[in-house]
Length: 186
Image (cartoon, rainbow, N blue to C red):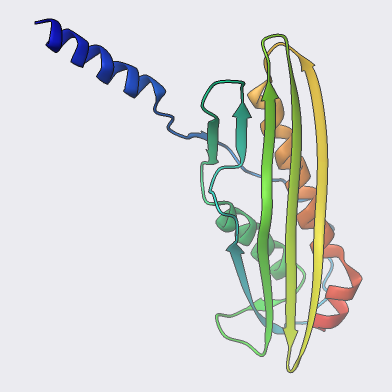
């Protein structure tokens, strides 16, 4: 009987220590002016997530397992949808295969929160690398945005989510409005 109780307690303890990732809603709102730039030119678009993990938020506490939060939808899909919509509004025709290729690599997309009993420190970092291939030439640009916040008690998930979406929207807008990329595609 004692072995059975100990076994049950050990199992409950192990399940309590297991850390399943929860979800964060990643839905950046892009605010770019719709201006025809590309005059029905054809290009392909690919977005690849190069990160080692799929989570976008980690909450770290001393002597505890990290809490990991993954996006509700894969972040590469979210970025791809936003870019597709904006490029099509700018007059670019997207095809699976084309002479002009736009490749976006997600190198970093993470909010790291150091949580203590009395306060928190949050640092966010998003880095996207864009490679545009036009015939035999390639243009590569890296876009990075960082932010930090801190406060008393526990980090507010809604605020972290909002800030991440705003930063992601800003970096996507930087890609869409970058004159070097625009000229290279044309």
